[in-house]
Image 1 (spheres, rainbow, N blue to C red):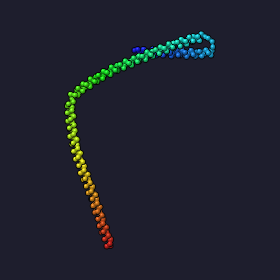
Image 2 (tube, rainbow, N blue to C red):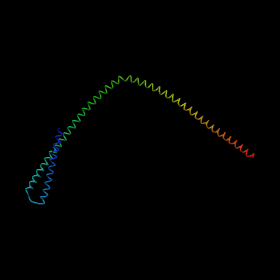
Image 3 (cartoon, one colour):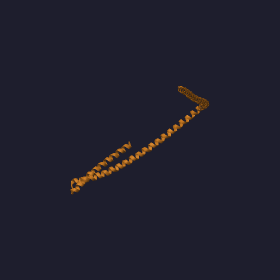
Length: 188
């Protein structure tokens, strides 16, 4: 509430300062016209008074504005300090609650720790057994892979030999045909 009141006073002072500046501007323009047309006139004197009043009003409004700004700054500082104190209180409370919850958790975990340790040990034993089984299976797989590769090599050799045999048979058959053809041609 005090902050909004200080803001309203600062805005009001600023409006009065702006109005005073406008009056001063009007007086300056009138003064420039008077310089072009010298001579005292009642209008000129009235404007001079208005100018003096506007200047005084502007100065008063500026002082009030500065005062309102100082009050506003002090209120902001007070609010910031109050917020910081509240944050510290809240932080302390949260830390205390967290410590309490952590202590309760540790106590409850201590009661459950023994069965959990036994379960971990049993799981570790099962894991070791599975690892041993896996190593045995990997060894068997390696043996089967080696046997399969040996059979593949034997099959490749047999296919090569069969190909050579087929080629040799083809060459012999072709040679016989050539010999028959040659003997026919010679007998003719």
